[in-house]
Amino acid sequence: MRTRVTDMFGIELPIFAFSHCRDVVAAVSRAGGMGVLGALYFTPEELEMELKWIDDHVDGKPYGVDVVMPASYEGAEFAPEELVGRLQSMIPDGHRAFVENLLAKHGVPDLSSDADAGKVLLGWTDATARPQVEVALRHPIALLANALGPPPADVVDLAHAHGVKVAALASTPRHALKQVEVGVDVVVAQGTEAGGHTGEISTMVLIPQVVDAVDVPVLAAGGIGNGRQMAAGMALGAEGVWTGSLWLTVEEADTPEMAKRRILEATSRDTVRSRSWTGKPARLLKNEWTDAWESEESPGTLPMPLQFMLVSNALRRIGRSDASELATFPAGQVIGITNQVRSTKDVVFGLVEEYGEALDRLSRITED
Image: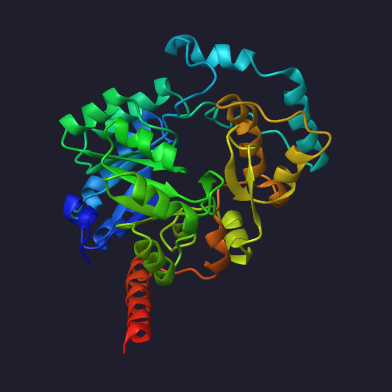
């Protein structure tokens, strides 16, 4: 397969796989696509270890790193050294009480006294994402991707100075144009079907609009789970696909067993766009957690990054309890067709095989 993105990165297949799991990232790159490591949950020190491991296990194949540098968020004016404290003080007591009452209702215990302090902010801000960028650019990455809004122009310039291409996600043609204005090399047009932060336009409608709006390669994202969907994205003008939820249930994934089981059992109707995770709309597995934040008792969600700071400890407590009805995590509608555990390599090759079968079927239809 050959498109502008395969030529740009020297890869065999225009399949990009976003994952927080280094094993998945390395496996996809070794199989001929490009694995992209989500850096959000790692400290700079942890990210350094993860990327060193990938360097040693990717067989010299290209891979990427995805960061979150939102265009707008609360506390952008605060100095880095006072950021966490100032943001914590902005969280209303009523919201803290709502979370505690919700956990108590479901019998979720406190963390043990020897539990680690956890991470309350992550890379949701410019100040916390820039150190991740610095670490990433010390490694032989081929791609730096930004998940929320156009990346800062100086970060794009810095990546280019290191010979690294830049991609950014867009959920409208207008967003795509803003990405191109700051110099991104690839636009990921992400439909509302996708897991995590998404807009409101469906993939089928969004892709051709973005392709027509920009002159850089476009990757189709949102609802890409098999070769037929990949072929559809390419038919709409995309030059590759960006996949995420597809990799949550592969053998190599470090997805918690409780979450993996729920994904395998879920249908495509079992997700919902909710602000209950980060404060911005993100598609999550629908459950009693997301329902609670939409209920009459809810005080409403807080803007990014306050919402995640409010709930981060609660999510850790839920994860260590038996309250699976509250366990929330990003998942796209494609989970409705991910109903078995396969190796990453098999998934990649399956995409390619199904893609070829789809093209053959279309060819037969158009034959005289």
